[in-house]
Length: 168
Image 1: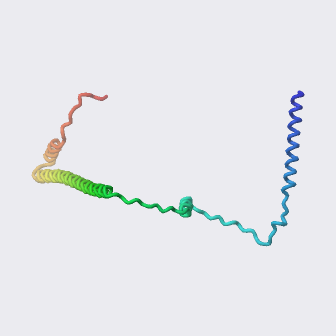
Image 2: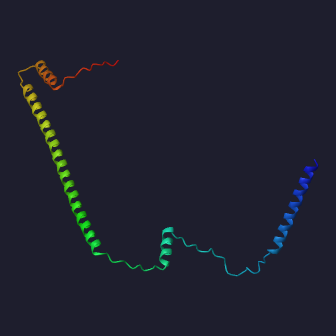
Image 3: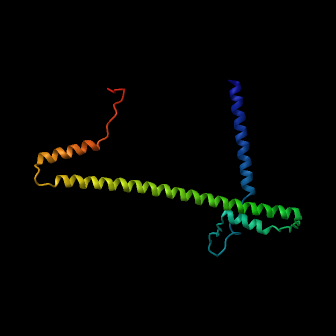
């Protein structure tokens, strides 16, 4: 119990010391408002908004730049550069030609597909006309017409392959 009381006494002493220090600081830092009283109205200070990018650019512009002296290239370097430039131009032309040939091949394939589709559509139209011509005879009765249509439909239907497996 004695230890607890000693601990509380120590805490109380520290608290009192801190209060005294606070009062001393308040007394030292007293400011008279008379110094700051003015008749001019108070205005908000204007804050300039700047982007980080622009501020970085401005900082770099303000720094004095050292002029670098560029070293002249040797004749070998100039020749190698020209040779590389010519090779680059040739390669670009080759790529362009390859791309054009690929585009031509794609166009030809597309035309072939379109022609095949047009031919199949034309064949279907011819078959429909043939069916209509067979049916258009007035002498035939309705039952014979139905038989003809069924025969033609059977010819159109592809045979379905039966699978070896049956799903239940």
